[in-house]
Length: 255
Image (tube, rainbow, N blue to C red; front, side, top):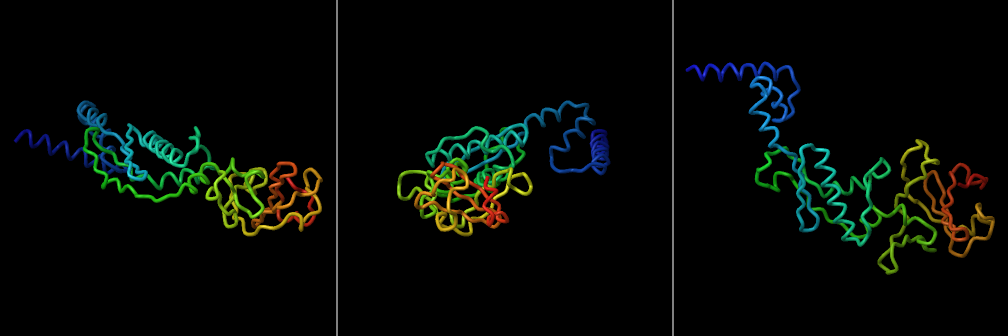
């Protein structure tokens, strides 16, 4: 009877404490139990729990776990990115995820990652509980996601508006309808922005000379048109020349 009273008294203390705290999960009980029990048994329970994240690339299951969710997430993302780069035959880039400019990369990688779970270290893996997606992707998607910035150069854009990432006929994508990143110094927010290419024009019919080097445009030079900008991949001087839409009539402020 004495043990039962102690147990009831302990639970009453826990209930009172929980009422004054924001309870989010079992891990939030640890400080309460530690305080009541003198910080002994519950320390072991907390130390034995980890964050587990499961991802899937094709038929390969990737499992990453760590003591905090940030570390587990970073480890899972890096593993997924590595597998995607390997499948597309491109080099894995350190720091691929850093900054708001690479949000699209992180979002793409997260499509392959399931729900993080806070579990006991020795708990058996149950993939179904993580709700791991079975994402379908193409090599073109991977290469455009991770190499689009470096691929956007005059040498890689042909006279028909295709962006090439290799010598093969199937290693290209039509830029019309694609989003392209706007240089930070030109964007209205001075941060990361993208705009869709809504039209493609012949530079020779629109301009008499290259705004940068003042020479004639080679045959097949294009102007890529977005809502607020114009972009010329100029082979004559190997420059990507930008112009804001409101300045396009004067042709004086090409960047």
